[in-house]
Length: 105
Image 1 (cartoon, one colour):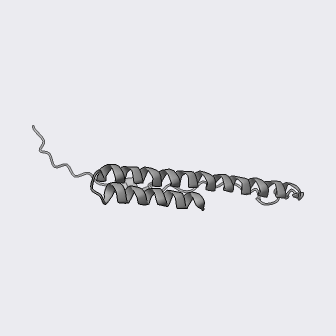
Image 2 (cartoon, one colour):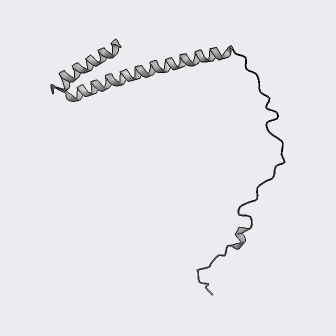
Image 3 (cartoon, helix red, strand yellow):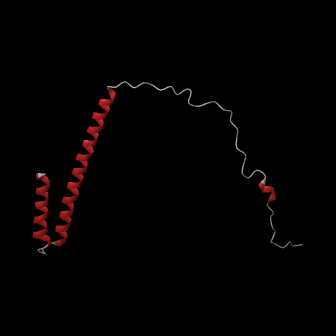
């Protein structure tokens, strides 16, 4: 919490001394963006590490309970394979080609 307050104070100083003063607006905006995105990246890394720790604790607690294997042999019945009929099997005989060119002769 102290770090967030310190970063807010630094951003306030940058805004008042650089941006609102008008001495270097672009540099102040870039410095503020750099600080904000740096803080966000650190927060993301800390959040990601806490998620990894929680997953590790969950896996360790699951490892203590024995898991019974399930019998999967009887799930599927063996049925004879019957291929599907083709969609275009007999329909191409019904297509007529119209000849629009003149025969030379």
